[in-house]
Image (cartoon, rainbow, N blue to C red; front, side, top):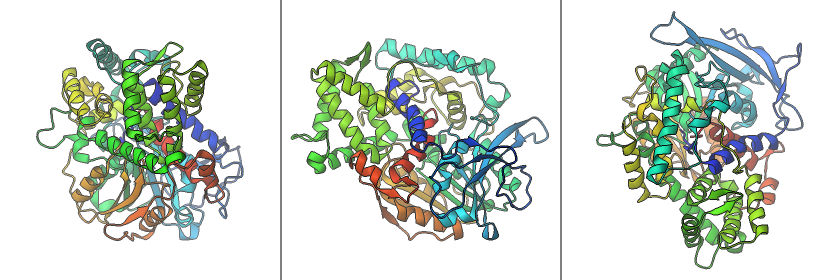
Length: 575
């Protein structure tokens, strides 16, 4: 998780985030989508390794980073044991892709990536964001390697149904349940997923923990010929990184975790927290609440520059809008857009502060509509929602949603009754309007059929061969700063880097922070103790102004953020 933790149910939020993948790809159309023709030249001149790389995609169009050679990607599959306790037994295949280092004479090794989820595709992340990561020198001296974890996407996949169409019973048209009838419907959807996975998941269902993936990662490290691991993990990928650091501390060369989950909260919780679902223990609702408060503050400061500004303040305007939608949902051709969809859509936008002007514009339109707007205002609101991927027709169909549940439930201790989720949601609703949403996303773990026998639950305090770099924004709506502070406090010798900004993970928000991370990955140079960097992007810049700001001639910084977040959001939750 770097959990979006957006519910699998919310039609508005979840479908908006799923569509963000498509929008992000369209925004950089042709970058890396073309399969490599047979016999096309390869840039490969790597040291001998156990991976049989072959050319698979080429970078298209005019978006090659300035001054850098054209990119030809190389793909492979690597077998790893299904059960690491039985290394000679059955195996599963891990799909990997790399961008070969362009300066082969000064190549350092491989930089492995995980974009989050659990359920995010590291292959997709490397394909679309890899060519822009951090600095040109870093890309010149490292092979950028993405992999799909076991059970996910192109790797041997956990499949609990024969087709996405058969996943219908897993979904209900709710962001979270409130009434007894809604809670019953929600519980039935969880039971359908649990039963399908129990009946059809196969042996891999019992070997989906993050510790299993960390052991795979160590085999991949050895397979590419690196003596120690160089890694960057975002959101849930931070938990994978911290797990690796504690399972294989002597093999850490440089390890970055960005948008950090509190590893204790994700796994077992502190004493007394065992009655809480893991998604409640993470306190993401506090991060979402505080980030939304920043949106209101910046909107008020912007005045006429923020479409949602109001004489009484944007926070009060939002409260009134939420109350109206609770009492009288807006009818969108038979779809009742209520206060829960408002909260879900808002959370989706909080992930990326360069989109906050669009959020303000959408809220202003909805505010007018909810106050008795005309048919033309309804049409305008629906069009704006469609333009950012929030269409409400149909249910979200996430191929591989079961991958999120299999990993998260294998990793974590949770209550065993649906009543515990109801109680936790009611309790957190007193703290944050986002509390019920973040609580209910993990309810499928109440009776998950997969095994937990191979998971790792700490201790989290191993001294690594080289220090870990921990990064976070000041206001992260999904993985609040306290998660990074907790991880940095647990890992001896680690260093915390903070971007004084807004959004989920620091990547592409601050050129200075990206350069500091690159310096660490290249030669181990840590930023100064207490290092803080400013965000480059104005959260409330209108879209035209944001697009005009460049991240070089290749792509705008806002597009890069969208490209990064597509991997986080493209997972069932995106955390």
